Length: 206
Image (cartoon, rainbow, N blue to C red; front, side):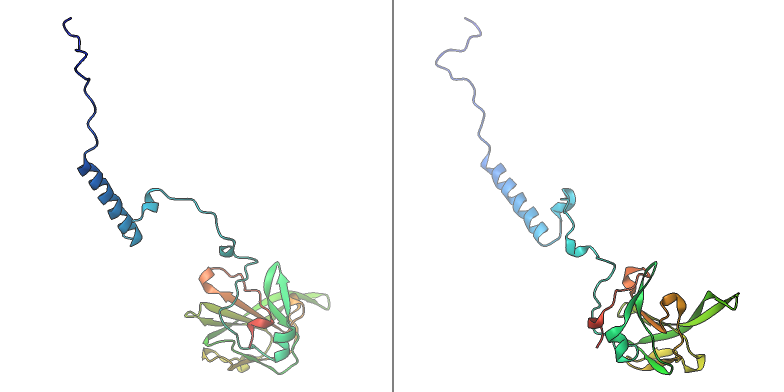
């Protein structure tokens, strides 16, 4: 009958994939692989893979270790027996120095001086108790040291300071708000863009 396909004639078959197409596909895969390997083109940017954070990347207690040894900021007993001072958060190491104890630079840097005050009651009257604050900054080390103590302005040296150099003298009088310590030493890693101090221990000092 008209329109029927004779039995001896096979139906049309699909043509196999041309070899040239396969070669082009392999070539493109190799090119993208090479670009990704040399970080010229990142495949991960097209299909980002969510990775879980490694526990090592999470800061614990806001206390990353210091990258080197610090010079003790005063007498050796301070660095061996100093106690952590906490006021809402960790402040630094505190210790009761005797009058006339020298205070030293923990590292090279630029030293500036200011003061702070807190209210105390004396004979039924409230007055302001002042104490000194020294800031020792070293941008190349990303470090700032803070010294809280009481003493005389004339004994304070400011400007460019070398590690281990004497920068002030404590009069030994206590700072009541810091557990009656006469010196509190605090270290901040400035790259963190925060005022949270590093938690210090004996191993951080020479």
